Length: 136
Image 1 (cartoon, rainbow, N blue to C red):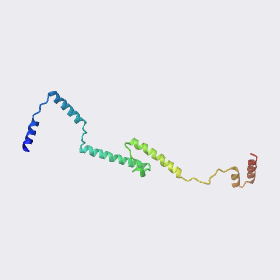
Image 2 (tube, rainbow, N blue to C red):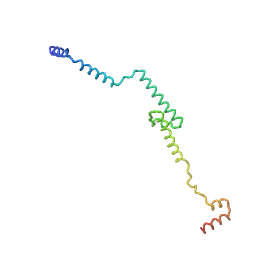
Image 3 (cartoon, rainbow, N blue to C red):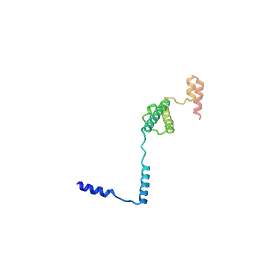
């Protein structure tokens, strides 16, 4: 077993490469190293975490200012312009819901001349309205 290891080591030790091949391999190695993602330092990671936390606070504060804090868990935005667009849309939706849920009287029919005269107890106007409707 040890004799096989020695043979492998001896074979790997000497290998000659032409200068042009060496230069092309070094250039290729540098190109590959350039494509590798750069690891961020701890301070950069901490800064990004703080920026993300600050943006989340901005989102919740903006929603609270507009009375939309119930949508905090639902909203997912990338930047402040996207946030303002979504808040405008949510405000429109909430206002439409408020209008639709508001009081709509069912018995509010348009009053005609006869009912107006009847509420005033004006018999002459009631009779003239009835006669006018007969001859239409």
